[in-house]
Length: 527
Image (cartoon, rainbow, N blue to C red):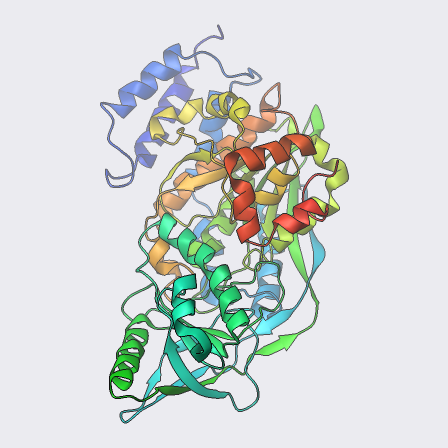
């Protein structure tokens, strides 16, 4: 047994807990959280490291996070001043400079950028969708990102209601789909599962539309009240196969009614679609990497990351500006706390995530030779919804270590982890390389309705919750860096492949055009 914490640290930890326990809507109520913290501090088993205790380290780091900090101003500059950060744009380049400057101000030992190449550049032009009828109207629409442009002058064509875009719907449409603008219906987005469905439904519908010879796809927005947002249906950074737009839900429903009325009268509804998007060739963009050097285990690495790029209708505050600011602030808090990590802490702001996890993929590929030394990769990419724990990527053997390092903040209710193998964000290529991964599980909060939308702005960010998440991330990575043992070994290719198949993640990789890259060795651990 290690000796109890000094009374000053017990008092500090309990005070910090009182400041951080959010309202009941954010953290489930406990019987008496402060009494629990007192009892835990007095009687808990020691963490794996006693030099100094992890409870003491956690108190110092949390105090640094909760005190005065540049967190809010950093996020304001990134969102209000720089705005949406699409790769290839000036705003994205300014975002990279923001990251370098913010890390330097945080006092890290080293900060640098690493270039990688994206297959193509894309910028939306003045998208227009005009419905031709006895009562013509303009429909509010934006291009699906990385979709091809229409020919000069746009396309005028029949509009066909293809329902949910199923095989049966295309069979009913038959030859009428050729040369048509296809209207695809969707449900209203409410949950993470709905968002996953929206993404996974798209590729087979695109396949059917291309095979049928359609001119373009009109996707009905899954958001109500005219909200427009960005989606990408090409997941490897390349230009998609067919022009596509996302149409405001109310306008799409109006188009559907107009199609039905014309059909009942024996007529065909027509529309004009113009997508003058600008498309270019391969382009270089940059990840931002920073480091706090470790002590006796400096050759090993624990990494914390979030993606810096965002879409451009809003200012990328929830996705993923708040977590970019979190990564920088975690580095600052650890440095200012005076706690020295045993393992080297590395921090990453990834680019090209929205186009297919391209920045983190490039990093994992370029650093394969040193990934044997990576003890863990930790990722945040879920907005500001309350964190409940981590998704551990199917690695049951690392759960005890994660619970161990989070024991000082057990009363926060954020030590409930899952063993699912999740996708869609920057931990994936580390998982494919066999590195233990922790991806933050978060409640939907206000993330879903604002996802990739014009409403994704700074006012949606709960700064108190963001500070809580930052403290959680900092305690996690510092605890993993200071444990005597790693949370788990790096897996072999055979072990990773077995995990992908047993978890069903192979099917997700196939849906998102990643499996071929795994099979040919472009992605993931080599034999």
